[in-house]
Image 1 (cartoon, rainbow, N blue to C red):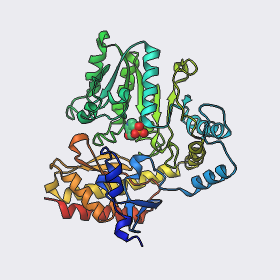
Image 2 (cartoon, rainbow, N blue to C red; image 1 turned 45 degrees about the vertical axis):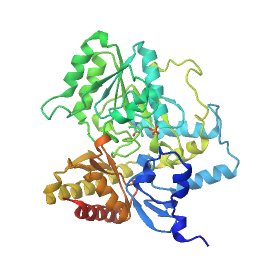
Image 3 (cartoon, protein in one colour; image 1 turned 90 degrees about the vertical axis):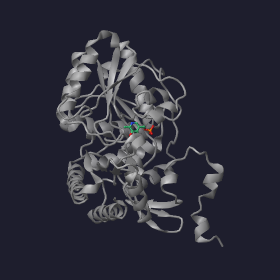
Image 4 (spheres, rainbow, N blue to C red; image 1 turned 90 degrees about the horizontal axis):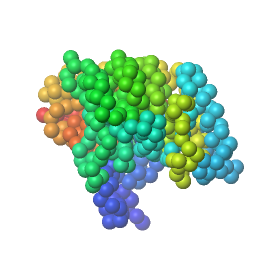
Length: 422
Ligand SMILES: *Cc1c(COP(=O)(O)O)cnc(C)c1O
């Protein structure tokens, strides 16, 4: 008989898997099953998930309708792999995305399937922006994160991650994100001055509306509007990386909707398949779609299992009820975080983020990580954000979480803070 301890042993991972593994170090358990906002380890212990696969599981683990659609599709010998050939699964997704997401928002974009992960969507956007403009440099912001392949990595504000490249990362210029230079400096004016110099040769500006990995710094809607106008004025393309903040995470399908801007290129991934299966999209303003056939390709662009669940996931967006629910739950999270910050002055904490992508920043060295560790001991998965400093406790529950679970998670967080705080 295998003892319970042995079932949860990390030995095979330590012995056989590369040192590069990371989340398993923060949460040393062997996971065996998950549903909704709950995960069970191999010993049968239940955990509440305020991590949601880094934003890849906005609709929770194993969402019923999506999994049923997938099982039906596979049982009918539906095509699994198809490169970019036409399949019924892709056709259904294309039509549904246009019908449910684009047209109701007055948006017109071509859909590009760039390869299965977020960084693929970013690389495709960068290549196309450079091809369209004939210029080489791309502006990204302080604390940005856009993925780990070389083009996307060059846009990163995280020094440790940048150094992993082992070569110089070029053709990138850093601009200050909203608020980076204090509350009385409009950093768009800094960018404006940078772009006025034609020798900067800038093809595009890429931005996250909420910096998911870089500390939950949040762009003001007015700032996003001025950014969009600034890009137009200088004939530079605006790329919104909505890989983490999109797919409803901040309350609307696209995170930039409240700012009423129309980006030239939009990157989506993480929760676009709805089920945790890999899928990514680069949305292209139609007149910019000047790719030659096959100029950018990849073997796993036709992940039909993901298309099936992605099509089903869009059922959440036929009306605005999920959007209202996210905003209501975001209010609960915000109120609780504000109250923790006020009651625990010693944390010197401030609340950051928007929608169900909020967190608590504390400048006390190592504290956010200690809080996350305490939360794990108490049965809650919660990660930190903020680059090398890791100084933000980041809450990312599934959008569909029940109020009772949301409140239970918040009370575990509060208890973890009280057990850790100075
Ligand atoms: C996760 C993420 C990426 C990269 O996606 P991968 O699937 O990890 O390649 C890019 N941009 C943002 C904003 C992300 O959160």
